[in-house]
Length: 71
Ligand SMILES: [Zn+2]
Image (cartoon, rainbow, N blue to C red; front, top):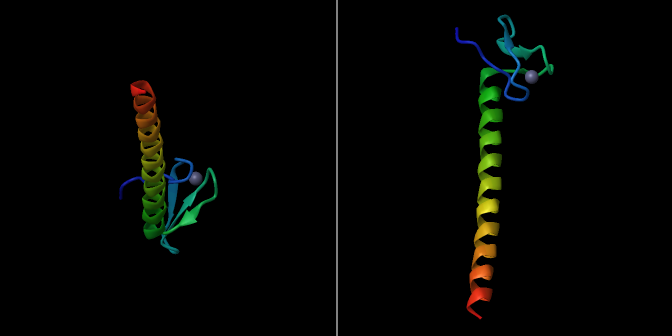
């Protein structure tokens, strides 16, 4: 079985065989494999959201800057 790492804190996850869940001994996260995948998906979405916002702000600033230069 491959080693899993905590999606919240990056700590080592220990597999609880009877419960079929992973336990993080660093932050106490107690999740199934599916839940780990959900948390990873959500954090990826968050990253993409903030990247999109940053790009949009940059574009607005750039067009403002270019526009003010022409005048
Ligand atoms: Zn953790």
